Length: 162
Length: 202
Image (cartoon, rainbow over all chains, first blue to last red; front, side, top):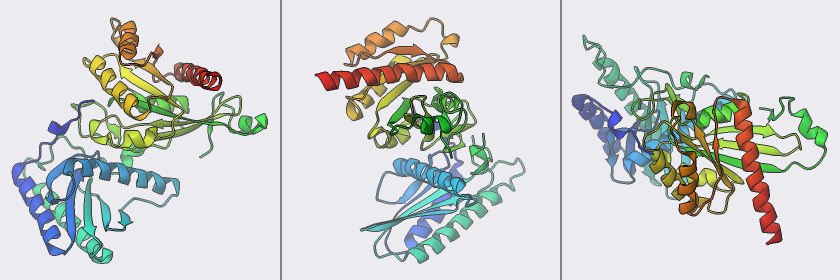
C-alpha cells in the first residue's frame, strides 16, 4: 500500500514561482481557505496555500473528483472537462483541469460562504493561466527542462483511452 | 452503456430470465498495479467506465495510466442476476474512497500481486480495511502474477487471513484472462450464497 510521494521532483525554483501564484490567488480574494495544485494522478505539487485541510489529501480528492466528472462528461459526450463546482452550506469548492504542457495539472480552491463563485472562478482561471504560462516559460530552457520530472504530456482525456 | 453478459450474449439474457433482477455489488481491492482494472476489464469484456489518468509515479507501478477514482462495469449473469463491479484505486492517498465504495457491497475481491516483496504486509493491511469497513461481507483473495512468482505460498495467505479473523478462499488468477476472472467471481458468489444460507438458517 505504499504511496509514491517521493516521485514528485519539482524544481525548487519552479515550485517557489508556482507557490507565489497560488498565494497571490489566495490573498486576492477574501474567504479563500485553501488552494492546491496537483498532478492528474493526485499528488500535491506545491504546498497548499491557506490553512484548511491536508494538501496531500485534497490533491488526491481533487484527482478522483475530476476523474469522475470527466467520466460523466464522456458518458454524455460533453467534451473536455474544465471545471467542477461544489456548493455546501458553509462554503464552495472549485476544481479546474489545467491543460498545461508538458503535463496536465489540477487546481483546487475552497472558499467560505462569503465568496462570490463567479469571482473565484475568474480568479482561479487567471491563476491557472499564470501557472501554465510559468510552465511554458520554463520550457524555453535550452535543455528542455520543465522542472516537472517524471511527468509526461498525456492530455487529461487521452490517458483514458484504452 | 448496456451491461455486458456473463456468457457474451448481450443484455437480452437478463430479460429472457423474466424474473426480477438481483444486483450484487462487488468491490475489487488491492495495491497499485496488482491488476484490479485489468480484472474488471477482462470480466466485463472491455465495457468499463474508467477514471484512468496518466501515471506519474513509475516507482509505485511501472505503467502508463492509473485509476484515481474507480472502474465500473455491469455484468449480467445467466440466471438474470447482475453484477455491479467496482475497481478501487490502489494508492494509499485514495484510501478515502475505499469505505465509500465498500458501502453496500455484497462481496469483495482482495487482489494480491504475487511478485511484490511486501505482499504479506499488503494482505494484512487490506484485511484490516475489510475488518474496518466490510467485516461481514463475503470476500475472496485473488493472487495475480503467480506465474512470475512460483514460490509464492498460497497456503500462507489463507493462514494469515485466518489469523486475522477471516478464513477466505485463496484463488490464483490471471487478471487478463476472462475465464479465470469469471472463475474468481464464481468462488465469490459461492461464498456469498453460503453466507446468505448461514444468515437465513442461523
